[in-house]
Amino acid sequence: MSIEDKVRKRAYTWTNWHMANIDEIIEDDEKFAFKLKTCHSGGRIRKWPNHGRTKEAHPWAWGQKGVCYYCSHCSVVLETMGIEKAGYPAWIAEQQPDGGCIQYLYKDPEKIPEKYYKRLGLQKKKKSG
Amino acid sequence: MDKKELKELTVSVYDRLNQAIMDGDNEKAIAMIKEMERNKRDFDDSYREWVDLMLTYIADKLGEDAVYEVHRMNGERSLWPRLGWIFGPMSIEDKVRKRAYTWTNWHMANIDEIIEDDEKFAFKLKTCHSGGRIRKWPNHGRTKEAHPWAWGQKGVCYYCSHCSVVLETMGIEKAGYPAWIAYSGR
Image (cartoon, rainbow over all chains, first blue to last red; front, side, top):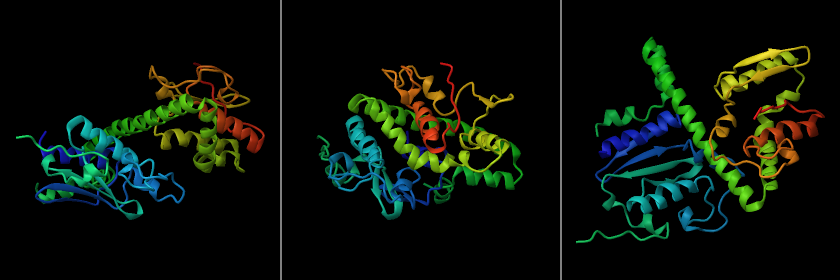
């Protein structure tokens, strides 16, 4: 599928499956960024004062402490399992304050920064040759 | 990508449906409602799968009584704040109207029939759009033993047992009688 169609389908999951607006989709040379002031998946949970969150830093929760347990499904499924399946994350989540999130979809997986692998306790494989 | 398209991709189906109605485009609006229903069912099923998986995992790892504890916590945190009206000062007719609303406007599903007799109202659901959809899956989690928190029966869908725990047992604790009574006819 072309990257443009991936952007269209990813947008559709927000607008027609979660049925929520995306605040902005920004394109630069390397990637598309989906900006959500409140993520209509885990962002709504993160607005609750007493939601469950990690007590320790785990590689399955972006290597950070205090990650919303629900939100860690993005770290596990879309990032770690994405790397296991395809060699790179399906998309990358960067949590923002007050339930916000920015999700990055890279045009070329080779351009995904190494830090997004490291936070999962993984190493980015260098392209051979 | 074209900036205009990127902007259009951000708009939720609700906002586009509102716009179609405002524009008087009935055909488009009806098509969107059908699409919304398909997506809503799939979305809800994905979360049912998740809950079923978690309850089954909890039962396997911690024992089946842990499922009962989770249902009680969910009852206090999530369900009673939404359904506590059932014990409020309200006519039985208004309770029937509000209970019907939870099916038609919250689960967004049809009720097959509401039958009244001298003693009660019966809400008949060929497929319950809460746990009934889970019970259609061959491998859903179900009790291995009979528990009082799951209608005293073995083989009860873990998810469905929330009705036994929250609406029946906890209802009796709160008001002296169940909020309503479920009969699954399994």
